[in-house]
Image 1 (cartoon, helix red, strand yellow):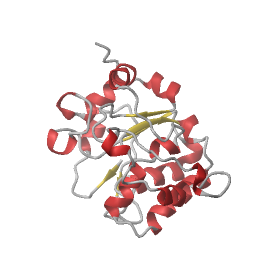
Image 2: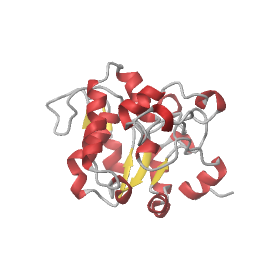
Image 3: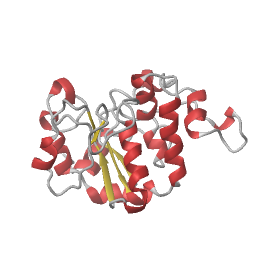
Image 4: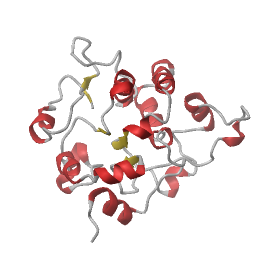
Length: 221
């Protein structure tokens, strides 16, 4: 989890006590856990956690925003009252292990609508190459035309899936966020629409919403 120093994240320990917690403050270098700078939205915190704990990761990792609930900030949370605690408590951990990567948002808006993905305005071919590298032939030929998944960079992933990539890959992704001329918002959006690719899904990853709600949260009616 990434947080600003002014954000209250006490809800995590209070309501999710059985989960290990790693909460990175992005704008206070004196904090126990912190990122080197505030850039790329939550991505530096996510990547720093993976890099720092690569050899001792838990079986299931969930990456969340610092706000708990409420429509104003949590409109993208797929639970009653837009509540991350409810979302976490209903999360099907067995399905996370089966799937490897699970986006915590099933609603296609935004990210999976035709206007979002043709082409994805956040991930150009050049940005794909800059972050992930090109295809085996070293050209743009194998870079997908369409990239998409539901927003907004909250997801669960298994340890096995994380470790399908070497540590060096995550170090490279983090360095891209630090070095890119894109600002905090733009670099964060690039990573937001690449997490599913990093964790083994096809470039266009838009599970049918009702199936997603059923498998991810057990909401099958």
